[in-house]
Length: 177
Image (cartoon, rainbow, N blue to C red; front, side, top):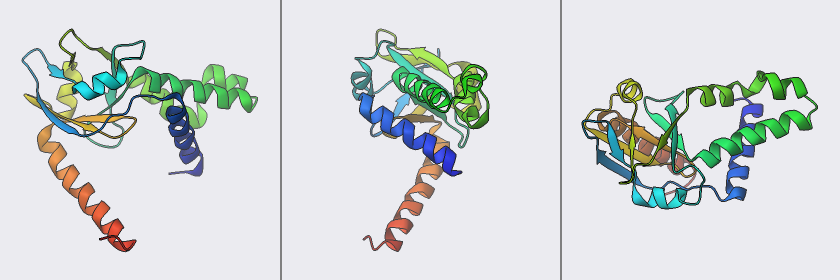
């Protein structure tokens, strides 16, 4: 990843922390009903309760076979940070027309879908997104701090095991137990 992209990611993480945005923790496997509705974990909904939009934003991941998600405030923070950087550097055209290193943010915004909570705390997964990642009758919801992922359980398990092995190997190299 280029230093510029790392810089953008760092800016976004710092901004999210400063704004007190939603935090998503733990892993849940929830049923998906025949209408494509899945329950969002109660702690996640509680973390989002003070946001204006009562729901989540999801998009097909650009790196794994899952859906990426976060609260609307996180999306607005990324957009605001991108606009502020463009204007601070004097790039008014970039602020208005986009492009450049902000292609990642623009791509995410173009792919994103707003999924409001229903009265029972469920979201309706669009059929095209569920099919894209292989979600059928269950979904694995994985908290990743300021964001989360939604996986088909069969796809998540090998991903999780590989990530766990990499983390253990890395800790072993650093003198961990």
